[in-house]
Image (cartoon, rainbow, N blue to C red):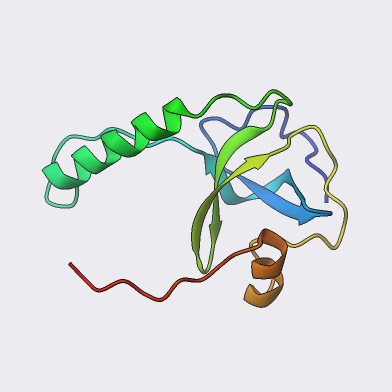
Length: 122
């Protein structure tokens, strides 16, 4: 897998990711996006509590210092959930790397996921 024409900044669009040798690189796909929250008008599906939570999450994300090596702070989307990670855009991702399409157990191991027991509903 190669990051091909992805370039050094995927802002404003989604890309993919590949996990290899304890690192993450950008690939073609739709499983990775810039780590930022969008602002929206309040509505039936985005009420005041969600708007407030989105604002707070974006403040936290904005407070994270830039990575000195140039990696991009990203949301990695998996079938198991979403996580924050630093993703490199300056590497070719090797064929056979773990991706969002990999089996859950493989991807879980590659990303070092830890599963906590479910929390009680609010």
